[in-house]
Length: 623
Ligand code: ARG
Image (cartoon, rainbow, N blue to C red; front, side, top):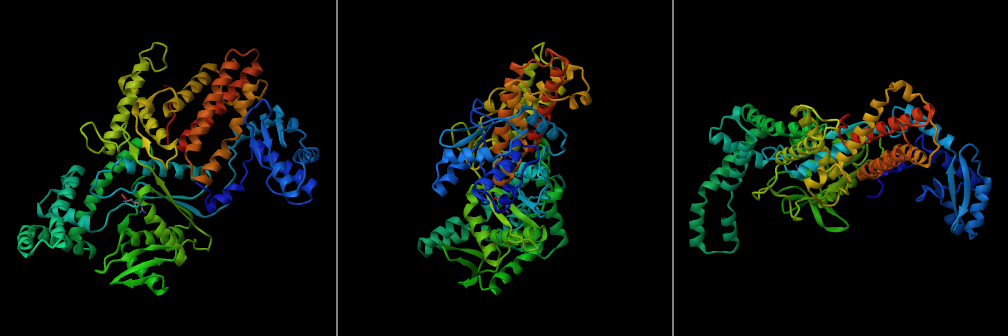
């Protein structure tokens, strides 16, 4: 995904403890001195190969092109002008004209020291005072939460965590489908059948929802009239569909009672929401996502604003009447946006327009991210364009608001078809989470049988607790560490494995480091204040990657690509393994090296845990 406008603001923020920040400043000054102009970005990149250096400065090549100069000669000049005292131990021009920079180990150690003392891992304070609004979850009342809502919840919560980490005010908005005719139909059916509302379960609601759809359906009749089946056949169908018409009339009456605030109907409607949401809150707890009653601002919240939306568009001449309906036409496409039907009814899009205005003006969002199924792309394109036409894409103080649809792909089974249970039904969220926790527990229990495992001897309850954390980590990591805009194959066997690019692998890496620290016998305070000595290349490589953490989080905010967290953490675990193999920690040669290495372990553990927390994955101490 390309940068959002508020991402542009993030692109200029530089983390305090990242060597790239110092290099950027020094080379910017050098380029200014050589070219006599504010020539811009020095293009500092991490080297692909540590043999040649830690960073690469790429600007000379494009600068030389602009000026018709020789890139290598220009690179030499820039390098001569650069003051790198105390920062770099070796610098040289290479290849077509890039500059390789090898960091001074003491400088790198000082950066890591600063990072480990920073409460935000060196992430600079946010410069945008406005809020970030995340539209997530989006379940529908009286319907089972399905795997699509799982993605909307997990991805949305993770982005919310990232922006919280970046110091932004974040609103998690659950735009639940809690209003309109389908809900009135369900309600009408339950009332007619004298359902016991106190004892309703979600399955009952589901059944009523589907039953109501079926019994009000006049699809055959509509088809028959469309194909002019002849008066005789039509009359016959009319009689046959008499009950369907009656059920629909009844549903519409219920809708009117609901809309006019009839206390009895409103009370029952609230009960439907309660029953639906109980499972959502339960799933949220299992998933460790922050979605609760305080995040509910569903379609019903906007019901009194819909007339105002249509009025505003009509008054500004942006909407026009078309066969009694109101539509917003666009200059660049045939398809208009329908905002009011000819019978006066409002639509999903009307509600979303009201929600946009609320989120930018009232919640003060300069970035509003809609984490919703990719199939709603056209809907959001139209809604956002309409909002821009009328100028609702600004905060109350006139700052521009970015409206972004982060459309995620489908969850597929091993057969690459939409995920089904063994009996061929759609997977409900609960089935899926139960299965993940079971698999996690099976894996943890299997490993605990080994007498050397740190979990050996834990009670079945204790194992199940860790197992659930593992199962959930597996599901969340698999979802968030890929390109979320693509479909992904739900393969629990692969996801739950402790090896490979999985959530449990990272949890395990974390637990291993925790156990090294515990075994050391040193106090946390002694470790935290130990002088860092980065002598071995493996120590340096690990330290360098740690100092890049803040930049990675900024990049996720800028691009909304949650997979950057996973890639960063997987590389961190790899570098840690390399370090642990090359450098004895507990059995280090001297006390200073031992403490320094323990401190590297401690910082790695902290960054690993913080990174996992951006996915809402808990990091157990023991596994
Ligand atoms: N309830 C909708 C669905 O299940 C998702 C809502 C998404 N959010 C929004 N602002 N439209 O498809």
